[in-house]
Structure formats: C-alpha cells, structure tokens
Image (tube, rainbow, N blue to C red):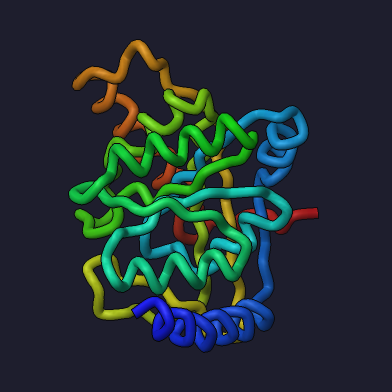
Amino acid sequence: MRISLVWAAAPFYYLYQAVCGTLRFHERNRESVDGLDRAGERMVFCLWHDELFPLMRVKRNLDIVTVVSPSRDGELLARVLERLGLRTVRGSSTRGGMKALLGASRLMKREGIHACITVDGPMGPRHKAKDGAFFLSAHADAWIVPVRILPRPVFHLPTWDRFKIPVPFGHVDIYFASPWKVDPDKLDDSGLISARTRLEQELEELVPSPGKKSKEPS
C-alpha cells in the first residue's frame, strides 16, 4: 500500500503546484504573523476545512505541522503535504486525536515550529469549530491565528464541506486575524464554549461584507 500511495501522491503534488502557480494571491495582516515568527513565538493557524487547498501560500517560509486524518485518504493527503514542505501527525476527532495533538505540541515546543488546524474537520459540521486547536495552543503556549483563504472563482466538490478548488488563473484572498491566546486554566466547558464562539465569530468577520471591497496590500 505504501508504494502505491507514493506513486499516487506524485500526480496530485504536480497538479497542485501547476494550479497554484497560476494564481494571484493577496494577503491582509500578514505582518502580525511574520512579527511573531521573528520573535520566536509559536502559532496555531485555524482555518475551515473547505479553504485548505491554497494553504502553501500561508506557509511560505514558516515551519508548520498539521494534523491529518489516519484514514487511507489521509495517508495520501499527508504524503502530498510532506512533499510540499509541511510536517504531519496523524489523528482526528474520533481516532487518536488527543495523541496526535500531544505529538504536535511536543514537536512545536522542541523545534519552535507552528501548527495548522482545520477546526471543523475532518467531517464537520461545516464551519463549526472543534476544541483541538485550543488544547494545542494551551499545551504548546502558542498563539491562535484565525485565517480565511478565499479563492475566486472556485469549483465546489460534492463533499460535506463543499471543498473549494481554485479555478486556474484566479485570485486568492488570504486574511489573518489578530493573534490571541487561550488561558490554559480555563479549558473547562464554559471556557471552551467561549473560545469556540470567539474563533467562529472572528473567522466570520474576516470576510468583507458584500459590496465592501477590501484594500489591496501595498
């Protein structure tokens, strides 16, 4: 199986690189991320599962680990992501999730790297945050950074999240919210509800209102 997955990952990798090479990216508030990275601070990038495709533009020179489902499809995704320069640990909300988060936390602290979590993955509900990012932030003493990655135009896959595939030669708008931290002593039920509410609200508010054009980066 491993040999077949190695071969299967290659065409996905080259197709991904070909599509992303045609896209025009526009980033907002990137300076807050780069400032924390230069200061040696760790971050957990939090995004929706359907906006994962153009993630590598967020990465750039950052060293990032991400949690990938332990399924066979996850194995293929992990191999593609590793080819693209991301590190991966395996787990989900139902299979080995806490073990994966602790493994990612240890890696972050040991090597000073960041993490990326699709906070409604791997199976939804769509755009409803789960708690993994907050536990990871607390264990690794890392900043929560909400991120929206919005390609236009897009193809939507017939999946639970209506996964977005950018149309070649289109645009991708990337929005970073101001970083914040969770209080490790407030990860009880009420604290987690508050953190989920804040994260969902900030992710929603990152998208410009209809009819309101955001400024192009300088």
